[in-house]
Image 1 (spheres, one colour):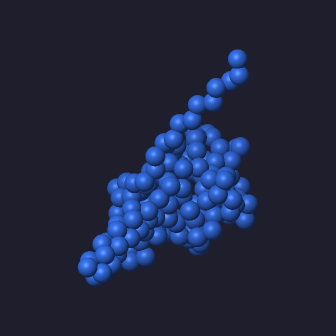
Image 2: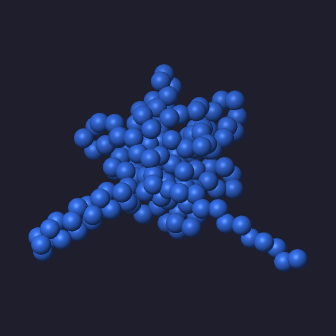
Length: 163
């Protein structure tokens, strides 16, 4: 009897833990065939803006809440200039990210805009010369990250104004 209770508890814990897990960790890789950005890494620059870079790379996960977490301690958000940026403050983060067909999926595109400091990622085009890229999620063993859909639910609250 006691063994059965322990077994049921372990199975329930295992199920709960799996249901509330983040995606597998992955490296961020720019994809746009035939462009200068093909297979370049993506990492935050010194201003905490996501940039297409060659030597550096970042590790990311999509959290169970749909946040895009980079380097274990920063969350992706869109700043006032429509740039993808990172912050250590989870309150700044935006949700809605997932992994689909080994690419980061989000409601806004990833537009690489060439600036003096390099290719900066924006949530919308800044000029006709911008390059729309896909961000591939590559695992540590070199394979594509599996699809990951966060376990999020939308909670709607209604506030009534006083009469």
